[in-house]
Length: 220
Image (tube, rainbow, N blue to C red):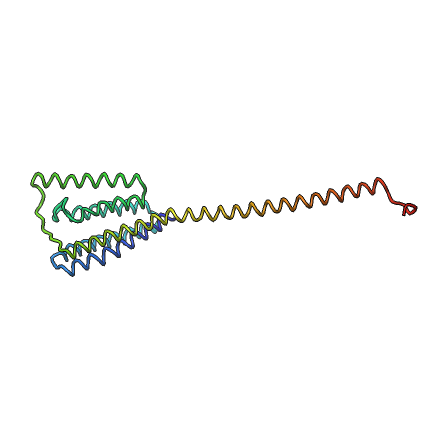
């Protein structure tokens, strides 16, 4: 189905972008290598499992699991990265967009509420002094790479959302053109049929005239 194909594309490209850019961050800054590897392994392992379940027809369940897994992963990593100040918290906005793309408005609202509650929990932990210390420092290159990752995912989601609207619209337009052509052919056929009916009526009247007024040899 269209939803299954969309999930396959979103999941596949998310794995590709996350793997490539997170490894670049880890290799460029060895202090972030362990976190990058954990994130890549988590995303890719989840991706392969969910792609398999999607192929079995569990598209909705796979979509829910994808969003829940990403939220859980980013939230867990944010605990030691500054909580609400973590750069990963910006991913919450993308998770809402993923939910809207794969599951619709209701799922996006639920995801937004969950992410907002999690963000508030980090705020409360920081205000009460219960938040673990920030163990992660992102350099300018890492911040730029993560921003590029976020923008890439947003571009993909925007494209797939546009395709989801554009494709049915294009099919509807083609069907409308075909229907107009069919109506035009029908109208032409009716006109031709009308002409044939007139000819048949004329022949019928002529035959009646000859039958009522037979022509004999003397008349000729």
